[in-house]
Length: 214
Ligand SMILES: C[S@@+](CC[C@H](N)C(=O)[O-])C[C@H]1O[C@@H](n2cnc3c(N)ncnc32)[C@H](O)[C@@H]1O
Image (cartoon, rainbow, N blue to C red; front, side):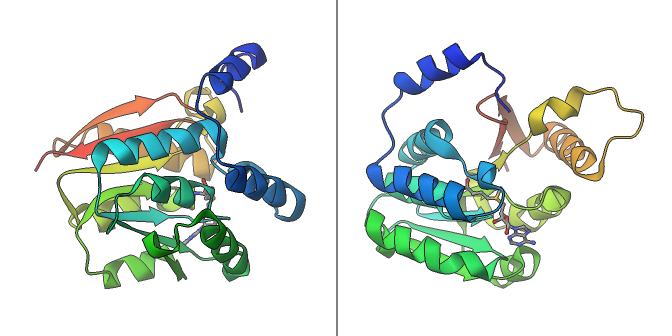
């Protein structure tokens, strides 16, 4: 869903550095061959994630929800030499496509893929993360926040996608659906957590950026 008019959306994209050709191709192939292609971050958010990565200069990044690799490659582009993005997805059918585009983008040395359930894989990871990008099943957002929190360094970032959930977070439904409720709970949880400061950035479907203070 776009919160801006089509004209403003186009203006914003036209005044943002273009995505690399390899990500354009990945976007095209995802739309042609993969179910729910709208899950992919896309041009504007991809450039924003790369820009954030350049600003934060993380050494270890965790991504929960690789999908076809668009956001992971965008983040990898912003990593310095020696930096790694560890990216997890439960859907093994997408792995070959992810690996193909990681190779074509020249980010192979920076991307480590994991296949399986993030809730089971994360507890086995022995890294201190500088940045985490949560973009998987919405019902588990709060769980992911809890299981990554102690693995993030003081001053590190936990970023979550789709926190506006197409505007459903402010709809006055008597009983929000499960995913909407999970996103609303996540936004409330982060905002009321004194261990972080946070900004909800209204880019694409909303990014919640939390910085760990303790
Ligand atoms: C919104 S897509 C990720 C989009 C991707 N970050 C991008 O911007 O291109 C969500 C992904 O989370 C994955 N996923 C869902 N539940 C998961 C789980 N329990 N563990 C790991 N991955 C999961 C799905 O298979 C899907 O590929």
